[in-house]
Image (cartoon, rainbow, N blue to C red):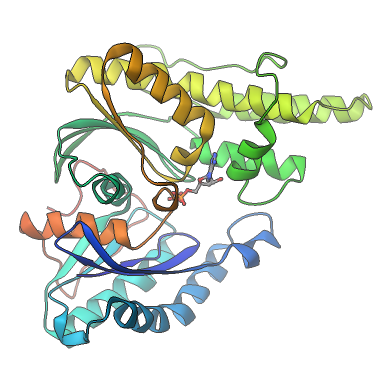
Length: 336
Ligand code: KG4
């Protein structure tokens, strides 16, 4: 399966055999360009995908040691994402499937993030509870089967990754900010700064991060105005603690409610050392199995789309030449 990912700022094309064996995983990151603007510029992202995608597909096919004739299906992220960016991948993949006379498989991006775990752990099978944390999404998903999922909790406003990115931008430590914030937090005192964790009344698995983001930004600006120097490692550690303290109890609740005894993390923010450590502590205490994706598969990549695309293919999911891309889509509904 040739698999295409273009929902944000990475253009990626992979070749994956039977869902779990990655033969090639070619990727071109646009981060250098977007760094100039302190965030992703959607128009630039679309144009960069356009110039990269054909070359990348050729590169992936070459790396996999196959020819175009060996491709049995083409999968692509069709939602959610920056719509202009998503459409580049969707149209390239539809054209490739048409030219090769093979099926086209539409894939939900966050289902792809979850599937990155099937590559990391060949023995992993549903059901499980998945915590999906990335730059654009923060969801808790009941993964009943490979293509049967239900959203059981989500952020009501900002995604966790977006908070890391915005706070890092104000601190001037780079874009995307999650990884530099993570490095900065090492050795910091996570009790030094008190940052709020929000609760959504009557929705025990829902989350809200906008108050935390505002509180963190206010703290930085107030310190600046008073001429006080922040203890940056402690600030970053306190911030990571607040994000983790919001996520962990909700994952615990979800795992308990479903009774699966299996927890999976997914998405770019699943690379965060504090969150990985806190999930490990939780699961060890409760006797649950924990699956954390390999660091290189946490962020956007084509392999995860090829993996999920395979299971969608087995479930009979097909897109035709009218298949559209969508900025938003319920992970439970996807492309039935
Ligand atoms: O999954 P991803 O590559 O793109 C989306 O689908 O959104 O996630 C990117 C997000 C960014 O917000 C980035 O700052 C965050 O993942 N991220 C991290 C870490 N590494 C990447 N956040 C916290 N800690 C990290 N170590």
